[in-house]
Image (cartoon, rainbow, N blue to C red; front, side):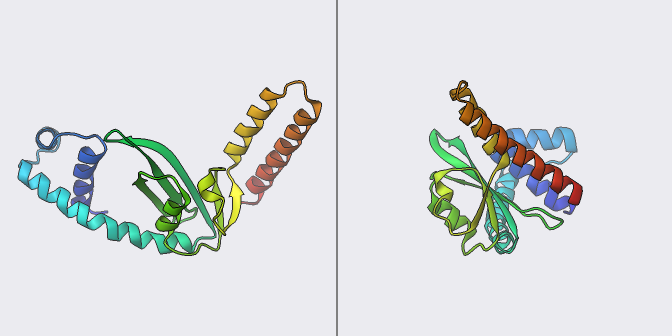
Amino acid sequence: MNRGASGLCLIAYLRTTLHLPLAAICCYLRSLHQLILSVGSIQVILHVVRQAVPPAVDALKPQARQSRILHGDETGWRKNGQNGSIWSFSTPGDDAVRSYEYDRSCVQTVMKRILNGPFTGHLVSDCSVGYHDDPSKHQRCGVHLLRDLHVLKEAHPQDVTVQGWAQAVRAIHDTAKTWVAAHA
């Protein structure tokens, strides 16, 4: 990324993530970077970034769909007093894609809209209901699985069958991780 694009991203970050007022952004840029911009200039920059982001994000979707593995997750997020979710989709590898998008809904239709087409690889996700009807091959997230096993074991501490089953699943998980680490 060139310096100009980095500067645009910094200004967008200061405004959208840190929620700094425009005058505070001007003060920050002047104080730390010796860059003098007016509030009007900041508004124009934010408009330019706002116009550039959707096409850039949309260009990542086909790349994500072509990946053999796609990690999907959503996290609850309040914005302007309204409940919503930040959706994250990422792929592994040298050409990794990282896509984050806010939406007020957390249902499967959001996932379909974000992916914008068929996905033929393996979708790695938690057990959220939004992923259940997706026709992709699924792999549930190991961390979520281990958390659920822990909760199950704590809920049934005297049940030998539950404890044994949970330990057996954990052993399979650990063996798989060891194998992957040795063959990566």
